[in-house]
Image (cartoon, rainbow, N blue to C red):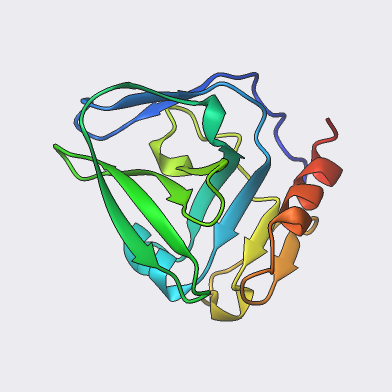
Length: 158
């Protein structure tokens, strides 16, 4: 498999109704897919795809937001940020790691280049799970995100 090249920032996105707009103005730290049950339910899909990035590079440009705090299977807490009008999930802000933001790939205006560089909670993946052969596969939640970031840098050298 040949991975599509990373587009240059900014990576723009928004919600379904168009009220909320955002931009991520930096190189991603990782492209991750989570297969835990919480992410499956939150996304309504077999996995949740996120662009892992620095919160300082995420710019909320317009629209009212709501936040909901969720405790994950790992015990970590995350603030889930949504459009106040249509409810679309836009990004997560991990409480224990306030320098990060995890942007929903589906909320990006163009996600055609998004191929996960890592997958977590793979033991909970569905029968259709077919990761790219060069992706990092992790059972459960890694103790930190260093391995996920290293996998991304291996596939997309800085």
